[in-house]
Amino acid sequence: MGSFPNLVRPGVFEGPFFLIDIDGAWTPPSGVIPEFDVEDILQVCDRLHSPIKDVFESLISEKLRNEVLRNDG
Image 1 (cartoon, one colour):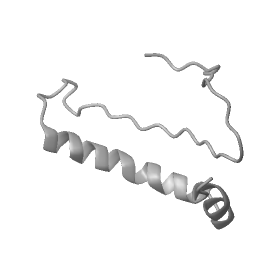
Image 2: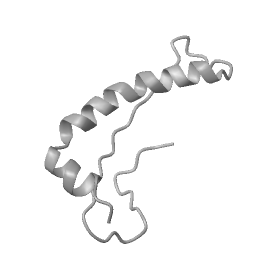
Image 3: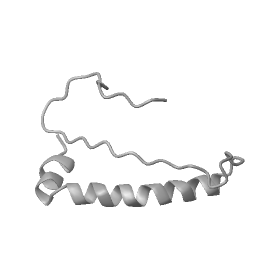
Image 4: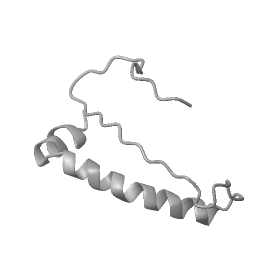
């Protein structure tokens, strides 16, 4: 699947919202897709999520967190 610069999300958003698109990728060290194993998949997901979470946290402020992310409506 390719990356396309003009991705348009359907829908209309009312009120404040915050969008960050941070991607993670994984290539099997052996170059061969391994057999399906839930524990291995969860470990890979955890390793991918950790740096993405750090980037996200570095981009947001307490004001954004309180006024937008914690806003119940």
